[in-house]
Image (tube, rainbow, N blue to C red; front, side, top):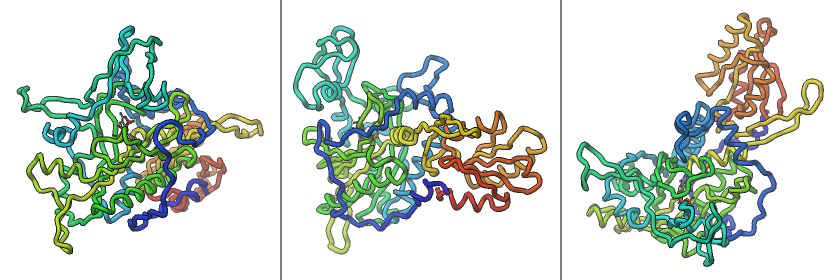
Length: 492
Ligand code: ATP
């Protein structure tokens, strides 16, 4: 049996219950929170090359030279990213009775972004070099060159090395467009820079329709757009990306306990899906770093094992207080309170927000799964193999069906096996190249099981099942194959 399946059974979440005792220690903000960098090194360019070669992720419009900072997801990438999102939805919505889902339109009116504070505050500090005219995020330069985003000192241009950076100016990250045939003040609409506002604006409608009482949550996944000053590091920071956000509405006073509860839950989600715990840590935002709506924010950081990346944010967990509901109530004139019948009182719930990036998490799962191993070949000589040890729930294909050769005698049985499995799992049928090369290819894209149909199959109606991680092979009757795989592939 695959070690992944044994180690990470899919268990339903326990009933929500704030558990301050289950606290994970949180590092202080700024600098190095004292955790040594894990020793495994994988270069970003290795991941980028693998992604291109195997059709996982590649630059948008590459035949025209590409568009800086947008990426297309190929046949395998779209499966992988959807599996990350499916697992998030499963843990947030499907396995719980206190969270419901929704999907908001990407285009939204000015009023929403005015009330939320994004038009006024969703800025990054931009500096331009007077010598080479390149532009950078000032806070990132401070962190890289002086140790923290708020440290004082002389900055130099990372492109030309001169100390000629101008004064920072606020650069708003929102993308604006126009709705309808006539362009005017009133036709302006905005591409959402986060999914969160959909849950605040629709709070009362969803709460009433689903008859939920605090504590309860509303979850959403989907595209967000930010005109980042310095996109980069592949899909880590792009101008179009996907988020997975949940707004958890609680009674004021219980917010701090719920915040701690969600920090633990979200950390466990990454570990349970295969990220090594030593590559994850928590980082507390300092006072001067907190967003305008936040009472407290803790980031989950992942150690991206490339020299230029290191510890970087995967997810932010904010206590947003009642800021958003109050702001939208004031701007819209609509009542966004909750009426507590038992105590006959109205209040604005406080909000705990786990805000994760689906595309950024996909990159973390790729990095963490990437291994190069020395394994003996048929003659006992050591050969190198690259393997993506993705959790089977995330793997793009769960099973590859491989007829030993392209001979017509094998095709009908191999097709029959593929047809039996494809309704249940995402499978690939591949009959070209030697079987050894096909196994290596499936290892590189993380397929947990290869099923080989050979000439003996025609007599004994059995196939060889190869395990990606142990490379062990077992002969299984075709009639028992589905049950055999079902035991080893967790439900998704
Ligand atoms: P950062 O500090 O990296 O700019 P942020 O703190 O502004 O991120 P949030 O607004 O908290 O990010 O968004 C929640 C999550 O959305 C982030 O933790 C990240 O995973 C993802 N995310 C945000 N901006 C981007 C981006 N430009 N590209 C890819 N993912 C992003």
